[in-house]
Image 1 (cartoon, rainbow, N blue to C red):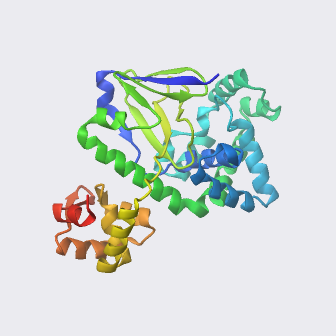
Image 2 (tube, rainbow, N blue to C red):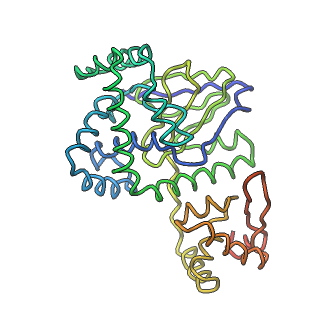
Amino acid sequence: MPGVLRIHFSDRDFRYVQLAKSADPIWEAILGLHVLTTPPSRLPRHLQPWRRGAAERLQSEDLRAACHLLNDLAPADAPYFPDFLTPAESEEGMSAALCTLRATSGARLARELREAARHRALPRWTGQLASGDRELLNRVADSVLQIHTQLVAPDWSRVASTVAADSERRTAALEGGMVALLEGLRPFVWRDPVLTAPYPVDLDLHLRGRGLRLIPSFFCHTTPIAIADPNLPPVVVYPVAPEPRPSPTATQRSEALAALLGASRARVLATLTVTSTTGSVATRLGMTAPSVSGHLKVLRGAGLVHSQRSGAHVIHRLTSRGHHLLGR
């Protein structure tokens, strides 16, 4: 019977909520494997084309072996899989994450695999891993890298742009305060001071003043996923919100804007409905940063965009004239 994830906030926790701005490579690798091993009928429509393409790429024996090994540790239908597979260092990139994974202590391997065995029967080889077999741990890390490189990376631009767009929408919601962000974070429901969502089991996550890192994920679907160990920094991965379908009127307006400004420049302008950096616009649209920068310069000269430096980045937002032109 499905359970509920309950995330308990204190006043201090609101100050330490972090929202990841980019796709997390190790989470996307593991959750991409979950999509690949889930029947298509149980997947959201937007993930079905990726699953078909990934299944076609699953040709080499080495890649199939990597998927089988990782699926033994982290199957899609498991109510728990070991937290050592998704180190926090993944926010710094796949290399940093795999370095941490390979260095996992024997005590932690034993503890988390013992916890996994409470929820399901584990294959015999995991006993070697639990005893601290470093060669086997390296094979696990290599398998994660293979899955990312051969199955996920070919579609990384779409993964990254979808996650970036979701992050930008959440960041825009923050203008209304943290509660506004939490109230709009589907599939969660906010009832002060608890954030709840459907979950495979009942789980209470007490933040205890440590805050929370929220990671939007392209491949996460149906329910969010939380780091299980209460002693680790709290992390929750949640499904990205689907892009809203344009109305017929919006489509006609987009076509008119493309005729007026040019297709690429019109796309850049439309992306700025949420505050963005040059890099995030480029990632979302699959364009080069210099090309986006050139379009922004023209839009800025026309009074449609305002740009302002913030630290190492330049932040771009629509002016009132830009909003009016887009009909927003």
